[in-house]
Length: 114
Length: 112
Image (cartoon, rainbow over all chains, first blue to last red; front, side):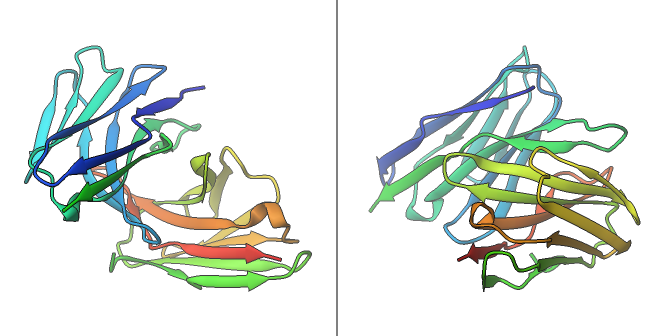
């Protein structure tokens, strides 16, 4: 079965610093999702990547999928306290004839010190 | 997210009692999912639905059943709750052609 490994597990950065979170898959990724979760709340969709070498940005967050489609990175530029939370990567896997379901990494907990 | 709501938001129940969690969507999305989130395990799929009355098992389905009699509602039932089912439960929806899966705000269930 496919597994997603996230690193680091937790991260503490000073406000204004850049940071990168990685997500590595045991199998080729056909749809890679990044979500953010605040404690006690639901998951907020950030970005989806499908093609090898694809890169997407939203505000100060950039996500990339490598050419081999087995690794993705999430980069935050000039971090702010509002970026704090748990970042989760998810991958599309198929069950039977369904559209696909997501499996998730265990998450990276980000704290941003003012 | 306004398009998907879960109820109740919090529940404490006793071991051995039946519990039903509700997920309601207003997006008319075909696919609906139930996940549980636990420390050290992350999010794991319990059951999913690909249409009215069409459901299937996920990774951790033992002890759970689901029903979907209408497009907008997906119910998760714990027939006889156990302490190991203490968790945060998330519902999600998706539709081909739409980017991303939308998650509800979660239900925190405690079985004592």
